[in-house]
Length: 284
Ligand SMILES: [Zn+2]
Ligand SMILES: [Zn+2]
Image (cartoon, rainbow, N blue to C red):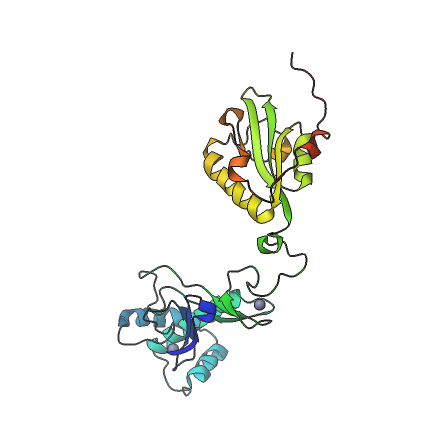
């Protein structure tokens, strides 16, 4: 195996290319990397044999047979053995995986498919992922990323990174459940529109904090971790904007937004919503 990318940008990944079949493979540094496709003395011969048998039924037309002979450079009267058949299936498996991750602006470089070339998944199951190069900047990155980690986000991008510094609201609204569960509160994050939706559904804003999207998302995760197990869920009578009720909890839990979101840049904007609150009929 020939090393073609060694820890690009300090990331813990290496990309190798097989000197024999030129298939690539991504692997963590320090691992003993072998080709996805080529077999060696470590391969159980029965696996290659089994693939040979599978392969027989996959090749049905003369055209397919010829293609296979061309690929392996074998003559019309020569046999393609089990090892060749196994290699071809592995090669196609790798190509399919790379094709699946193709997208405009990126060149997919290598994948890591656990189990290959042994042909089964009885070995380690974790994969080192699919890696590609962002054409615009040339950096090698995991194809799992929604956008390039190096290039500035494209205007209008809705990913968290692009929105990280834009303002966002963390809110707590109250709602008296008509089904008799008692006073409930809903926490969450979103835009002004989101809070207004809750208000028009009958909720009352208790506290609305404004901070950056990054801060608010982090704070909301803390709330979800702390109060998620107390959520009432999709009970009847909740405003439609409360959706499945995963952030709706009994008011008695005293959900404290300040505890998860404080410091510079955090502004209390509850006042902006109190004028939007409709007059509620006194409870008799
Ligand atoms: Zn190879
Ligand atoms: Zn880039």
